[in-house]
Amino acid sequence: MQPPCLSGAENAFAEARVCSCQSGLSVKPGAVPPDNGVMGFDMGHLYASLVVSLIGYGYFMYGRKQSQTPFLIAGAALMGFGYFVPSLLVTALIASALAAAPFFFR
Image: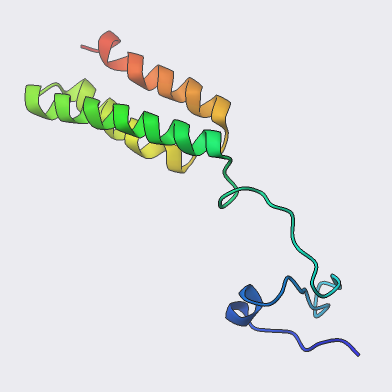
């Protein structure tokens, strides 16, 4: 006999059990899912995002105080793009390009 399937909220707090309702997927009770880090991010990416966001904040504040639109835009982009990029390498490449952009578009 299989356990009854749980709703979304109840399933989130179940002990890593998956019912074989519609998908046919089943896991033994008490099984632990693999650890993928904090919400799917590794710590290196989280720290890199923090540093890039702090640099973006500096660019943003400088652009606002000095009325420098390129720094303002680059700062806002540096603060926000980390939410959409899941890779550390891609984060570093985009951050480098955005940090250099205001010096080329004055």
